[in-house]
Length: 236
Image 1 (tube, rainbow, N blue to C red):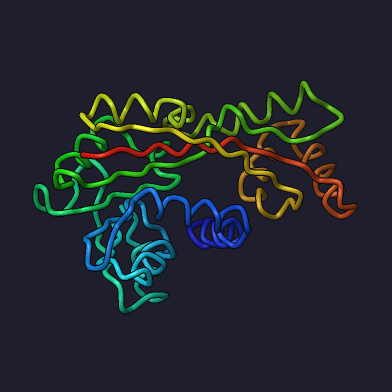
Image 2: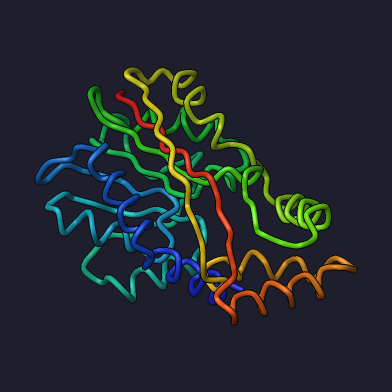
């Protein structure tokens, strides 16, 4: 399961739009040389490695031991720690930057996670959280009613599928100032970038034929999907 997720994330991370999105998040962090920056929910560690290459003292935290092991194998020079967003293994006011990408929808208590971010950031430190709004994911199909039902079902196992649209208020409620929000629309014309998600449709009685149609569209270069992305940033 973790390997499938890693492969899906690798495909997403390689998309030009995803590269631009990561770069924008680094710009919003505004971290300088030697600044302690934490990537929460770091996964396989790509963002940590990129932030370290910019000269920051970057580290990653993830609650999944397998993810941490993969990150350490891929980037042995960087620091990766096991921990949760609600209980970070860092001292008060010890960081200059906090970043969480595609994380808050899976965190049991997003408000507690933002309070924890406020705890570990030093005054003037920057926070950037970004992620997709699961309620806005769309896929082109000749069966729109079935498609809406299947896409709605995909988010049922997600603890907080609509959390992206709450990100501004979460930062404000946690005491951050100068909170700003940006939006992006991720567009997918290759099914493999969304396949980890779309394959869940096969759990529905009508999902197998729908998925087969999407794969056929992909073979004919007719696949189209999209997802809204929200980027929220603020200052401690």
